[in-house]
Every structure is written in structure tokens, then in C-alpha cells.
Amino acid sequence: GVQTCALPIYNNSGKSIGGQITLTPNKEFSLTTGYLGGPEQDDNTTDWRHLWDTNFTYAASKEVSLAADYVYGQEAQGTKTYKWTGVTGYLQYTPNDMFSITPRFEFFNDHDGLVTGEQENVKAATVTMGFKAKDDLLARVEFRRDWSDHPYFFKNTTEVQAQSTLTVGVVYTFHAK
Image 1 (cartoon, rainbow, N blue to C red):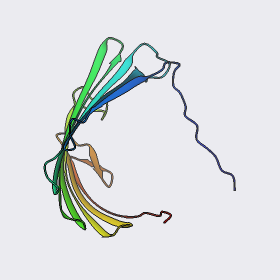
Image 2: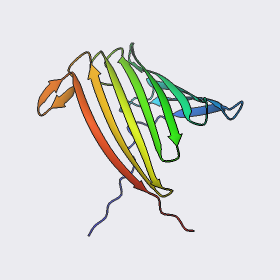
Image 3: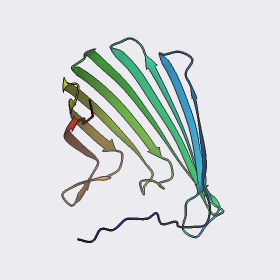
Image 4: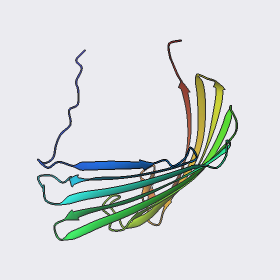
């Protein structure tokens, strides 16, 4: 058979720049903030997209950890600047070495409709359960509910305002001993 390799296709001659800083004052707390910016439109090297992302983690105890993430983006297109923001919060409870449960809530505001195609707020609530059978075998079951203030998801061919998904995953780790 013939194998092909997808090479990146650049849409303009501009370059993006980025950087990240992580602060870890102790083993319980971590704060990471980063920036990525550059021209991302076809044949346009003057209008930039900017993305700032800040992540906070806190290990409250051996069993409980918390995390939050905030993202802010904006992109210039001519005289208009489009903006979007997102916030996510997590709590992970691990009562023993074999089980964990992680509820998560996400909120995304596409202020100007650039990212989703419409000015809207998209939210998601997720619960993930992790099961560790052995050191090499991990299974996860995740239920997620997404909803928007506008029809954004599809049920068959009809646009709807919400959707639910159930995901089951199994991971086996191979390693040399």
C-alpha cells in the first residue's frame, strides 16, 4: 500500500510567538499562565490572533485536588476585533488507589461568534469515573451534558440546544521491566 504523510499547510508567511510561566511555590499549589499570538488568517500577516491561558491547581489533600482554567482570546479582522472567553473548574476525589471521580464544569462565551459561528454561551457538565484494575490497566467512564443558548448541536440532522454523551475508555500501558 501507499502511505502518505500530512505536512502542515501554512496559510500565510507570518509567524506566531508564545511563552509560558509556571509558578510552584510548594507541592500543593501550581499556577501556569501562557500566551500564544500571531497571524492565523489566509494571506494576512497583519491581523493577529491572541490567546491567553491560565491554569491553577491545588492539592487540598491526598484524596482531593482542585483545578481551574481561564482562557481569553481575541482576533482582529480588519477594523473588528472578535473576543471569546472560557472558564473550567474541576474537583478530583480519589478515595483509594483504585477509584477516582472527577466532576467538571465548563463555560465558553463566544462574544462575537468567531469560534462557534454564532454569538452564544456554551456550557458543559461532566462526571468522569476512573477505575484502576492493576498498575498497567485503567478504565474511565464519562458522562457529559452540553448545552447552549442557541441550537448548536445535532440530533440526526436537526440542530438542538443540548446533547448528552457517554464515553468508555480503556488504557493499557506497555513498558519494559
